[in-house]
Amino acid sequence: MIDLEKKIDARVKKPFFTEMMILATTTGIDQKQYIKNIKELALLIRGFLEERNLIKKIEYKPKVFWNFKGNKSIYNIDGGQLSLSVTGSASLGIRVGVLKNKPGDKTKDWCDFDESSTLSSNLVDKDNSHYEQEEESFIVKYDKMITGSRMIMEAAEVVKQHNAKGKWTSKPSVSDIVYLHGPIVYEATMYHLASDDNNPIPPFKMDFCKSLLSHQSDFFYKEFKKKELDKESRYFLPIYCEIINQIKKSKIPTYGIVERIRGLVSPGPVTSAILDELFQHNKFRLEELNAKKLNRTLDIKRVGTKSDGIKIKEKFEKRSVKDDVIFDLILDEGEYIKPVQIIKNPWGKWPRGKYSYTSYFDTVPEPYSSFLKISEFKRPIRIETLNVLDSYDEDMKFTFYSAKLLPQYCFPLGLDTVDKMTKVPGWMRNAMRNEYVSKLLRKTLDSNESKENINMVLKSFLSGRNWWVRPK
Image (tube, rainbow, N blue to C red; front, side, top):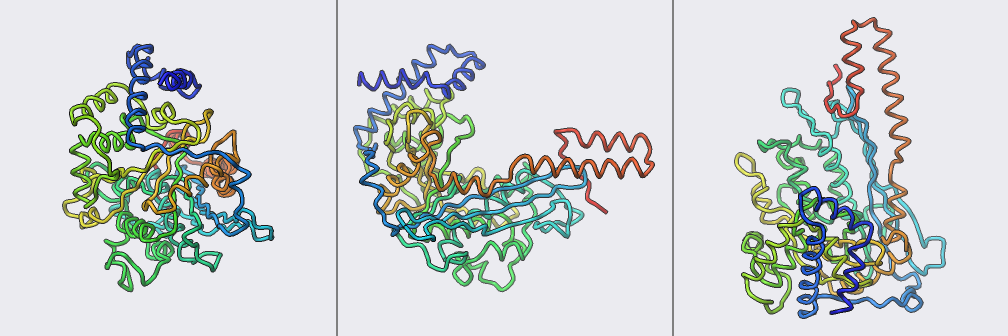
């Protein structure tokens, strides 16, 4: 225990712990007391996890490990987007790339890339948008619409690769791995509802839906078996639930790798789930699990009492501690926690009332989540999956060794590579915007418009403007 205390003392001095100190200062919390409390929580949780054998350790022996001889394929999937939001235009471009590599393969086919899916669209142009927008109900939720489009294209790409509907004709086997850059499941309603009054974002057009649903004739929901999809089936939520269920049906190891943990919810979703697995105290999580016909993940004896779990949860609520921070303090290099079920789509955020989406709630999959620590110099990464397969421990081992190939970054090498290949560079985005603005401004000046109209156009170029005018 003394050694662990010394490790935690060193870890709270890391540069990325500074942001937590700043947050503590802005909320009026004494920094010394804050650190003391966080250390106590970390020591307490580490002790409980060790007591129930919930921490796994990977030994680093690269010479022994890297001996696959080309018999294992790794599929790395990521998407990049180009967005241009200026007056009269809300255009976007999305491309999803797949990098396939086979460690140890000596042939020229050991590594191959496919820019599998692309999309060009303009959200304020009815004809050129991939959303079906009616004039009288036109609404733009720009960030949600482009992020949701990219997210659903990436998830659809996983299904496409599972079924060998892309560049490569051979299907992945259960000994292969599919990595997705980002969560395996998102908070779906965030990209479905347009506003607080639960108006949904417009449905996708038929052609775009067909491009997403590569698993023809093997649909999870009966609504998708129709020759032409109804409008109600072309909204984000039904399509996303269909795609995610296809991923869950597959027995191919598939993992979402998250490098940056956003938000300041304390305790975070993984910490909260771990506490409930240990103390079995969280009645709200149990209600959500029961609603989806799920059980608690870990078959372990309860640690302490329910009241103990509630007290620890209250301690987290009094101070902001993100998941990656607490697990960085808890875990040593090469360690990961056993995966636990987290709830991404709770009932309280699910649309209901006049819409028919309530029925999808019971069947939307929820992910299992874990944290893996690659290095003392970087935060642990979150790993999500929809199925904890027999190969899980071996897959975590491969993830660890793959991330060790980038010691300054600590992220799986294939995902880092495909991220660079699909990302749209900032200079390209800025150059396109500047060219658009220059041409629009020149046309305005040449048109002999009034001073008021010219000033209005100039103001529309200022940063922070997020409204557009549909072209006539």
